[in-house]
Amino acid sequence: MAQDAARIGHRERALHYIACAVQHDGPTFNLLNLRAIYLEELGDRARAESVYRQASESHCAWT
Image (cartoon, rainbow, N blue to C red; front, side, top):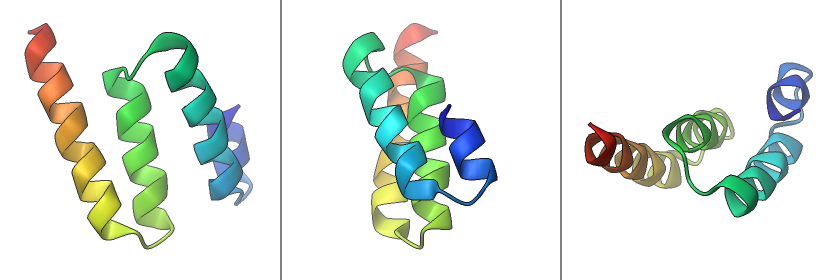
């Protein structure tokens, strides 16, 4: 649903759906990457970079 919302320009709604998924499934690599992408598209580069780093760290922990 997050990707569908983002596809039609509803980035804030997409972030809400991602937050719900993170709450349910935990912060997976894919969810964190999507969050960072949408934050970057909204112009919040500082938060996007922070979330990209978190995704990278979580991905390294799994490998």
